[in-house]
Image (cartoon, rainbow, N blue to C red; front, side, top):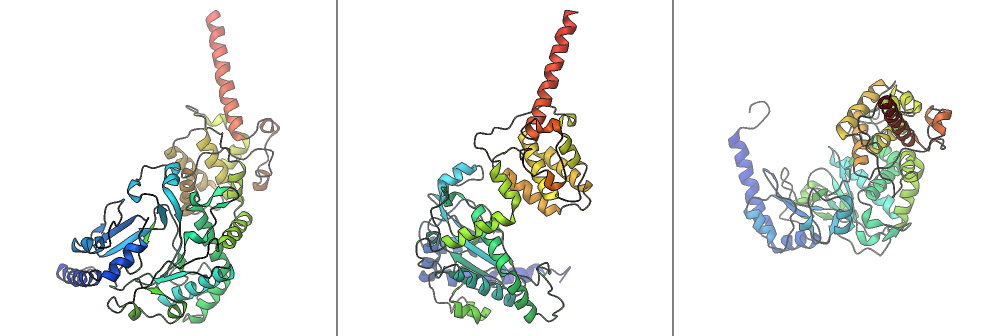
Length: 437
């Protein structure tokens, strides 16, 4: 063995053994049917040793599972989102086009940890939390490695909340629900993990290392997860569906691919039984994510960004110039202001990211790079909105007080536009006067 990697002969022997197991396993009609039935209206992709198959793709017949296997497929992965026609998906579709194709989404809670026992604790707490919110019909399965998947079907969610179609709120609503559940179970999770940890001094809070505190995998558009009864390439274990009693006493040997008994992963949910969960999660989010609420407040469907060519920093409002010098408090709110202003004036993304990172380095305590990336990514996944208006307490809340001149404008965007156009008009007038002379 060289540099910790097995020799090619060993790798090929392992692959050959796995291929034999997959051929025997996926040849079973009940396994093919279980994967096919679950994959209906979902984007479903085979995975090979070399990587995933082409996207988009779907299973048209149950025996497609075995046909892919004969070509080298080792596992199958599908979308949380439900589609009218998965084959019409493409990376170039915008939000509106995706919404038109999407008919709904399941809440898929993907729990991951380096230790199976810790994932088991989190899974139990998540199910308990769902029960407390009136959700009794829940699907649970083993991930195939060291985690678990918990599902609440689309049928359990209301079609609309506050006149907003729930089907169009992916991945936003599932993310909020996951954040809400994580926050609610946090104290008990820390306590339980501490009890089974070898060092009680080790697990002090939720910032403990990732190899101790289990995590929920972030929901994202067209995110794929392992289908029920798909094999896991590394462990050769089946992603078996479990009852709550089986979950509590689960051992990897219970996922032996040749001993599994097939049952449905999707439970027979009552209509709208997850309504209370969703509404309480949205209320929690309103209280705990003020930046997002500001996004809503200043979101205007009729707003159209302006394109300012060769925009000079001299046209920026004093409040923005002060923010750009760096802050000690209010950095997250300031980031919200800067991103929306820069996008509203038509700044190219490369330039925007450059300016944001330069600003962050000037802060007394810079925001984490991961946070910057996620906020920029989130912004570009949504339509452009102007920065908050000056008559709100937003700026004073971060220690930046707009000047009297700024208060004559609606918000920083209006200030920049007015300054820019005024300067250009002055230059045009000056040129005309010069010609007359």
